[in-house]
Length: 264
Image (cartoon, rainbow, N blue to C red; front, side, top):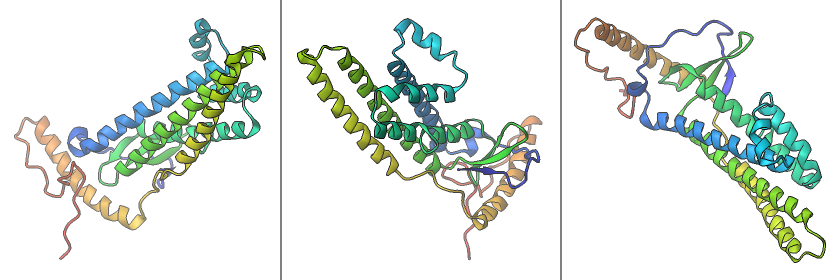
C-alpha cells in the first residue's frame, strides 16, 4: 500500500489530470469515505482518552488539543489503562492502537489524502515526505475499500473498550454492598468480551492489497502515457479557446482510466 519510490528522491513528473473526469466517481467516493472513517476512529480515541484519564469534562478538550501529536495521546491511554484493564486486554488494546491497527491505518490514510500526481491508470500516487523521502501509494478502489472496512471495525472495537472502561470506573466508585455494583461489573464483563470478539473480527478482514506486479504496471503505464498526451492536447485547446477534441477511445468507459486494448 506504500513503498519507497523506485526513482528515489527525484521530483515526480507533473501529470495532466482532470480529477472528476479521469478518476471514477466510486474511487473518489471511496477516498472521501476513507477520510471520514478515519476521523471517526480519531473521535473514538478521544473518548477513550477522556475515559481512561478521568479528566473532568471542562478540561477534556483543553488537554487533548495541547498534546503534541496523536502518538502522545496513544501512549497516555496505554499508561492510564494499566490500572483498569487486565494484562491480556492491555496487550489487545496495544494491538488495536499500534502498528498493526490504528497506526497502520493512519499511515495509509495520510498517504492517500496527501497523494499527488495520481496516475489514474495504475491508481498509484506520490507522497512526498520529510527529509526528501518520496513514496508511492496505492489508491486503487479495492485498497480503499479494504482500508475503510478495517477502520470501521477498528472504531467499533475501540468504542467497546471505551464502554468497558466507563462502566468499570463507575463500578469501582460504588460501595461493596451497593446492589448496583454487581450489575455494573456484569455489564463491564459483557463489554470486555465483545471487545475481544470485535478484535478477532477485525484481524480476520482482508488486508489492504499489495502493489500490482511490474509487468502489469508497465502495460498500464504505456496506456497512461497515451492518455496523458491526449489530456495535454485537450488542455491546450481549452486554454486557447478552441473546441475541445473528442475524448480518447482508450480512456476506460468505467470512469476514467485507460482501457486495455483488445488482443487480436
